[in-house]
Image (cartoon, rainbow, N blue to C red; front, side):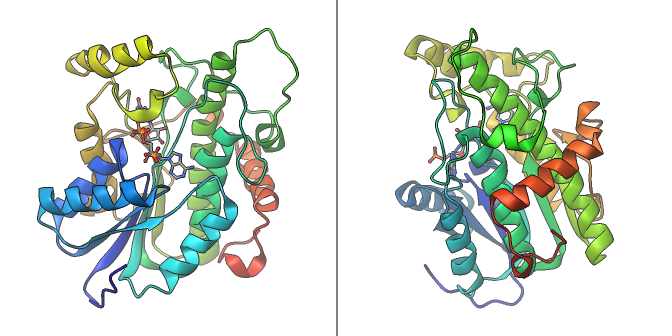
Length: 323
Ligand SMILES: NC(=O)c1ccc[n+]([C@@H]2O[C@H](COP(=O)([O-])OP(=O)(O)OC[C@H]3O[C@@H](n4cnc5c(N)ncnc54)[C@H](OP(=O)(O)O)[C@@H]3O)[C@@H](O)[C@H]2O)c1
């Protein structure tokens, strides 16, 4: 990795920035100013290099690099932060927790034994952000990519999120059930997106109360973005429909958008000066709205935080926040 030594630059880390929404977010930040150094944090180094080369060509911004990050491995998350912290990169001023997956073919586990959807979409990001807070500069911004599917009141075609406690999400009951693997997997997905919001609100609150630093944390719903890799596990016919037919929905006046449009909105949460002190909020695209009723349940948010601290074995010296 190239060592950059420019005090005027600031770094932004985008997880899953190699493709889909994350790529478009990186593209828009890179276009906005040469002052940003963009780090594409991605699990496959080859895909990372390809994305960096493409972004450099498309934006004529050379301040873009990639670092390996597999959110399904806590040791990989810790290694990523160690490498980042010692790489001589510009000061960290933004983190976009964008990477995410949906598993519909049965239960799989992270290398630490957590259910994969919860492990990657929530736990990996939870650890990453806590560790990075130690090296983050103010003003700073943290954005979690959630989804309207977290909200049972919204018609999204997804099963409602169900939060009982975080322990059950990490170690779900896998006894034979009448429900299909697809239904169970989709519910895990919508619930993980609810966890992203609990985590955002709890984080925003803790940063404000415990540090007084201007580091904001907000959650973002990009809307339905048909065609992305999120539906990679569906059968080939459904994938064809997702990739080539459903994108027509982005022409309708509904919450469905191209990755280009949603990526621009996500980038705005990082770069729009008007949002420099806005924290603990939920955005549907560019619009600040209320998240689901359930997402304001403080007890659930606290349970998620406490349990996550234990699950990732976060130690007192690894974060600036109370455990
Ligand atoms: N598409 C939609 O309709 C929609 C709607 C609402 C919200 N969202 C959210 O938008 C975000 C981006 O999704 P997308 O639609 O752009 O999907 P995508 O094209 O599949 O991109 C997902 C990204 O996450 C990365 N990723 C998956 N598992 C990972 C892991 N273990 N460690 C590190 N990175 C990992 C993927 O890496 P690889 O390229 O290596 O697989 C990819 O870069 C997700 O959080 C998703 O929940 C999507």
